[in-house]
Every structure is written in structure tokens, then in C-alpha cells.
Length: 263
Image (tube, rainbow, N blue to C red):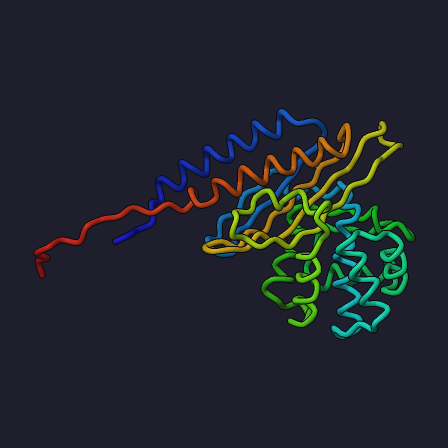
């Protein structure tokens, strides 16, 4: 029979956290992340409540979720086209138009409160890309999308996750590095130069990696990066390490049943 190996899991978790901390310490800029597996209940993170890093295009999922809630889950043909381009192609013009239709930052503040995001602040004015968030809040958003509740219908949740699963190939980097060959990925990334912050970049990625025995929600945010590529490399390094070693955090041991049990 198989039983949980609690001690082994604790040892492996400590080793993974140590290795992740060493990796992050060796990377440029600021790096924070959070991870939660819905199957095992395992959570990991470093700086996961830090909420002063912009999500850039990661906010486009927020815009869509808020719009669907406002429209009771039913978008017209024009809005559906804009939403598809906004999420799958990261079209900024589409995001501008839907940000305005949803009501801008004022409406988004109320939306965040209603769905339980405590560490997210919408960008000022028309600048949705300036939305500040934390890895913990990205995980909360993903939980709502996957598990439901908070006034977002199952139809709306399915629509958002479907579009996140159809992101164009050249934008499907990031937390997808945690995936095994049989896993499915739904994600949204953000990346933007920041000329007024010493000519650095902010690069973010969050999403769901779902397959046999796991349902991993993962968010990695970086800023003050020397370039887009450096941020992507950091995000994928963290995702890959977590994806490869997640199963080791809940190991089991096999014990033989006695052949002549005593009663």
C-alpha cells in the first residue's frame, strides 16, 4: 500500500525553496513569484504579496473578466472580436477600447474588490498597462477562473480560460515552461520597456498548467530587467524548476501489508 511520505516531502520542499532562492538571487532586477497546485494543495512563493510591479499586458485578462461580468457573460460580435485579439494576440488597441467600455480604473477597482483581489490597483486614467498587482492576487484571479464564484459565471470563466489557452505561439513563453508534454496551458504575459526607470523592462507571466495529477497556478513578475529576454529567461527558469520538481513535494512510500495480520 502507498502512504504519504511527509518527512520526504518536507525535505524536498526545503531543497526546492533553497534552490529557487539561489536562482532568484542570481538574476537581475526584482523578481517575485507565487505558485499553488489545486490538486496537492502545495503552495510556494517568494515576495508573493509584493504589489508594486506593473502587470503590463497581464491586465488584459482582468479587463475581459470585468467586461464579461458587466455583460452577464454575453459579448456582442464586435466585443468578442476585440476580446479575442486582446488576449490571444495582446492587441493594445483592442485593450484600449475595451478598457473604456468597461469603465476604466474606477470600475476596475470595484471589480477587484468584488472578486477578492486585495493587492491589485488599476492603472491611472487610460493606462491599463500600469495596473499594479502581486503574484498572490494573480493566483487568486486564476482560482476564480478555474473554480468559480465571486459572481463570474461558468460560461464567462470558460471563455476567458479558452482565450488564454489560444495565445499565439510567439507569446506563449513564460510559465508554460512548467508544463510536461501532456499538460495544457492557459496563460497571459506582459512585457514593456520602462524608459523612465533607467531604461529597463517589466516582464510578467501567469497562468494555469493543467494535466494528470496536477492543476498548477503560477505567477512570476519581474521588473528592472536589462531587457525583455532577461525577464523571460528568469520567468522560465523559475517555472521549469517548479514544474519538474512539483511531484517530489508530495512523495509516497510503499509498505507491504502483513501476510498474517493479528486481530
